[in-house]
Length: 143
Image 1 (cartoon, rainbow, N blue to C red):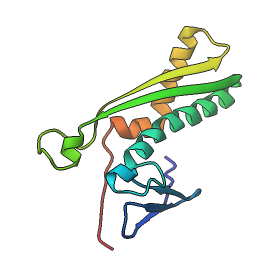
Image 2: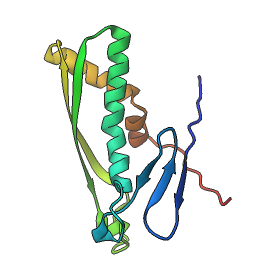
Image 3: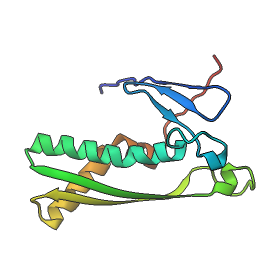
Image 4: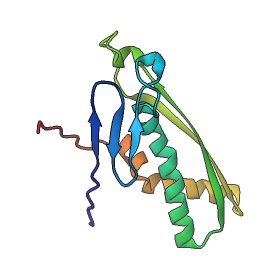
């Protein structure tokens, strides 16, 4: 097993704007209607967007490994979440997404069956999909 450790940092000051420092720095924020400055996607959008981005990246890796001419991948994603729970309006339910649906279109010279098997392999090899489906240890400590 070859374990790699990815590192990043997040820094928030007096607003919802959170500066993320990683290989490509970016900002996560809340929309103005929610009290943010609207300077970037909110955390839920960032979380959800990581899944189709990973599906596309793993699809490209598999295509390159198999010498498949992959013209592109399009993923439409939806996620259902109970906002009343995350806003503290109820204690019933859960904070996370209760369902996430991905509609994947593969642009390649493949049969429907080949595309379905390709998507199956992508979902098995996609770290984001794996982390959504399976339990990972999340440990928080005070600095």
